[in-house]
Structures are given as structure tokens and as C-alpha cells.
Image 1 (cartoon, rainbow, N blue to C red):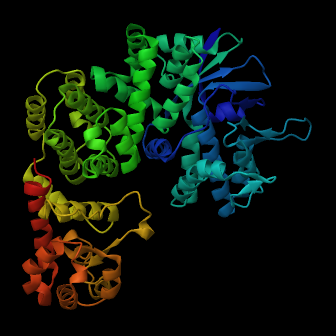
Image 2 (cartoon, rainbow, N blue to C red; image 1 turned 180 degrees about the vertical axis):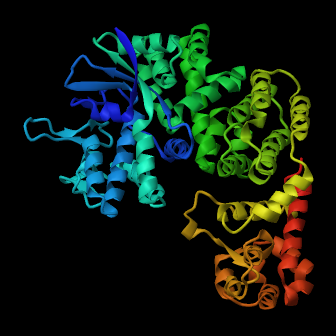
Image 3 (spheres, rainbow, N blue to C red; image 1 turned 30 degrees about the horizontal axis):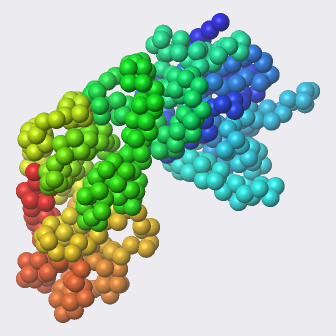
Length: 580
């Protein structure tokens, strides 16, 4: 029997003296910062709004054992909420709110003077259990261990610590009143709890509740469907698909569908995936899903070697065997990752499929399509601040058309690009936002911009990778130099003047060694150093253009020059570098 019931988080954790546990058949805890950030943003917005009720979805509990309630669905959220409670407790201890910390501890663990009920409220997944239990102790000193009882727990720490630290950093901004408000918002958030009183097939319960329109985990439903065929090999393949999805399985599944079939509402996704699996045959369906998951991992990895291997896997050896080609593809993947744009992922997969089917020997239009997508999202989303979903349906319709198309590749891709041009932000909008918002605050973005500028000016010459996201920031070859030195900021009081120091018009990307020579020298001295020693411009061809263009301004480098240079970079960027 299924009994849906509305319950608050406080009601779940405080209203039961039973322990919740994660069954062995459930996947490991795998929430990361992206999922956590969405939850924290929701909690913050709800705390500050008039509507104090935040819905966190559905939980399914197997209560056949009253002392040990199994979390059939909801372990990722419930585990994360417990880590948030631990962070709240630690902050309460820090500000000497011991009573508050004690109340929070009662939501984390069980203890009683008259019974043997001890331990944590939640027995979490094995992949984080040791560290979770360690930090659940109220006497924990805040340090994460490398070992617990001689057992290495570094991987567990790597799962939990980023979440805990993120939350603690968020809480550090709050006054006592704000902290209490945030806690109330969390504890008064509600879910729909579905309690199952017997041990009938849990997966069939998933199916029935999904049919009633409840928002269940599509990944678990699909796993049930695939495993129901009883083919042993599918277990290993499914685990690989999960790993390739990298904590965003539901998004990957939706993109898998869009890449072939076009737009779909999330609520209809599982039903359509299952129907597609039946029509296609389970072997082909799992194979296609695995193939897409391989691509999905690669497009997010930013690793040129993985991109090369994937291109070889899908038979595009003309690209995988040419370093310039596969790195060019990977640079588009890197850019989209930097932009935090994922809407283009299913479309790009379909473009590659289209390119394969067309058996085209010309890769120029393939690169044109990929780089147009990069340029569009830089112009519209990164700079102009438009929302990413303005092209979702256009992309979905195009992906469906491309996937198994036998049409002329060049003709159809040209039509697609022309359609995208109509959606491109206006030049004035781009320039105004570029001048105002591209600043030293975003070092990766500055590196990316100068990477594209430097390598655009001299097409055909050897490429210089200024933007290298796979490298640790401390080991990169290039640093950002302020032309008007930052030390001069103390001479000014107006915010507008101080902000001008960090505008892109006052910034150069230099080799790490060159940057160390400049220190706090005046602009004219920096110009002279660059001009006299060729080592400073050897790999950075754009610097030669810069010196020639602004040499006369060196003696009087001021805020007007900075603004004018920022605008000129923006104009050139819109028309040429990110033009299409």
C-alpha cells in the first residue's frame, strides 16, 4: 500500500526515533557543487521571500522494518541536508550558540539516557560513511582526516569536504538572525513522503508512482527497465553510463533524447525513453545510450586526448589523427564549459552524426558549425547576459533534423547558422556589456578572450594556447598584467576610477616570466621593456599589434584610453573574432 504524505524535513528527522539507511542496491552518494548550489540558492531565495514553503520533491521509504527505514528514493537530498546540518552546527559552535548547536545535533544523531538508540539518524552510502560518521560527532574539531582506523578515507573526504566547505562559506556571511532564518527555511521545507509497508518489488513501485505524475528519479526508473531484461552484461555497461554522466544523469538522459528526437518535457522523458527502447531493441538502446554517455563525458572533460579517442571511436579518423583538428574540436568543448553552457551538447552530438552520415570529406563546415555555436554563446550569454534557454527549442528541432539526415551537409548547416544569426545580440548591446563587465575579476575569461584574439590575428601561424583550463592556475604559462599598475589605485577615491583599473582595456596577458619584470612600473616603462626585448612578444603576437597601436599613448595612459581600448576590443571582437 502506498500512502503519500506531506512532511517537513524537521518532521522526518525529528519525528522518528528510527534510523534511515541507504539500501545496498542504491547508487553511491554523488552530489557535487552544482546540485548543492541549486539547493542553497533555493533555500536562500525562499528565506528572503514571502512564501516560506520550499518543495524538495518526493521521498520513498520502505518501512517494512520500523527500526530501519530504507531510503528507496531521496538519499542524495537527505544526505546533503544532513551535511548542511553539520555545517550549521559547526557555525553555531563557532559563534558560541551551544544550545542551537545541541538542537541541530538532535537532527543529526540519536542518543537517549534510557534506551540503546544511538548512532546517526541516517546510515549513509558506503562511499562516504566513515567520514560522515566522523564529522557527525558533536566534538569534531573541524579537521578532515586522511585515515580513520588505519583506513584511507581521502576519496570520502573529496566527496564530502567540498559540500561542507561550500555551505560553511555561505553561512559565514550570515548574522545570528539570518542563520536562524536559513535553518528554519531548511527544516520547514517539505517533501511528499511515500511509505511502502511491504517488500514487494521496489522498482515496480517506482513505475506506479511515476505513472501518477510524481517526480521520481528517471535514472532509477530506466535502470529498472534495463535490468528487467535479465542480461548480466547490462550491469557493467550501466555503471559505465553512470560514471560517464558525472553526477548529472537526468540531464544526460534528456540530452540523449533531444539529440535524436527533439524537444521533450521532463515529465514525459522516462515514458518516451522506455517506448524508444522497446521499439529499438534493448541491445541497440543500451548501446546508443552508452555511446552518447561517452560523448557526454568527453564534451565536459576539456581533455584533448579524450576528444581524440572519442573521434577515433566514432570513426572520424581524419579528425582524430590530426592534432590540429581534434584540438580545435576540444577548444569548442572547453569554451562551452567555461561559459557554463550545456544546451548545445545534444545539438553538437547530432552535428557529428550528420557529418558522419554525409560522408563529407570537407571538415571546414563542421568546424564552422562548432565555432559558430561557441561564438554565439560568448556573444549572447557570456557578454550580453541573455538566458541560455532562448535557443533550446531551436537547437532541439535542429538536432532532430540533423541526427539521421541524408541531406547536403553544407546546405543544411548554412541554413542553421543563418537561423542563429537572427538570434544574435545586437552590436551595441554586446559592446556596452563587454566594456562594463569584462574585468580582472574573471581571470579564466580574460585568458580565453586573449587566446582568441592572439590566435585570430595570425591565422596559419603556430597556435599559442593562452587559455588552458586543464592546467592548475599556479602552473600556467601566462599571467595578467595591469598596464596602469594596481598600486596606483590608492591615488584615487572615485569608485568609477578605481574600477577602471580592472577593465580589459587596462589588461594584457603576458608570459609568467615577463610579468615578473614589470611589477609596479609605469606604462611607458612597460612599453619600452616589451618593445626592446623580443622575448616578450615571441609567443604573443597580439602584443606587436598592441605596441604599434598604443605606443603614442604610453606616456599618458589614462582612464579615457582604457575605456577607448576596451570599446575597440569589443568592436573588433563582435565584427571579427566572435563574428558569424
